Image (tube, rainbow, N blue to C red; front, side, top):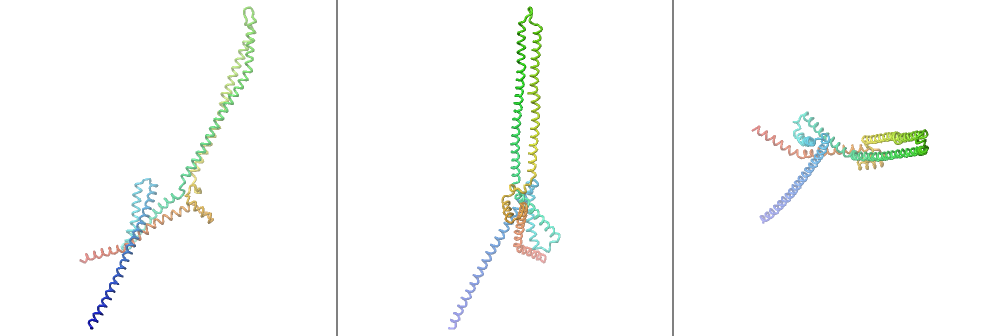
Length: 366
């Protein structure tokens, strides 16, 4: 009876212990699964964060390469130079991040200074290139187009004025020619009205004198006098016609035409000087206060902010601030993301160094 009671009691205690053991095992298994999942999630987050840093480094590489190409005009040289510098920047963060955490005592002050100076210089170069490229894109991005449009407008206005000038020149030249021809025609007509009747009269007198014969001869003193007067009158008429033609159609017209050509030559020079001066003004103008040359978004934000807050912030100030902010954030993203990886994996590297040290000590003792 006692044995049965003890057996029953023993069976009850064993069942409770087994149940408690299995319950604790389930809790530990669940906890281990949660720890494993957390480690996996944390590793994924860290890897994703490293990808962010790699993306920021790649963007920084593209910016630096673009700036180097614009400066050196050598694409291949710029590619390899920037590749080396950008790789050195990332690897310095990783390598010396591990070394400063694991072998800090072994690194001298001189090495520390060189490494820090190298890092700051690389980051400064990246910030400068990023600032330069972003500023180049934001600071008056439409400058060349606006300059070209304004220059084309000046050229079009110059062509229009030059065409009008030439049209007026041809019109006035034709007017001078017509006026000279008309004046010559009127003067010649006046000469004809004066001399032709006299010539006809003298010829008529000569014909009548031919009927007054002295014997068989009609050439007497009167005939000879009429003949002399006729020759004199015809010669005088011809001479005056020639002089009139030279005066009205030749020298006078050429002189008037030369004066008119000189006037238009001076007008052309003035028009050319105006065109040159306007083009020089366009190329010398910075267009810093011209909204057409600026970034439309920046101009709209500045206009709203200045009018709403009653301040006067220039576009170049916003561009400078935004460019510097982007460059600093980009370089900070590179440094923070890769250094977070160093912090995350440095504990594992500490174990590697400890095991290497232990193995080396064991070999020495052996």
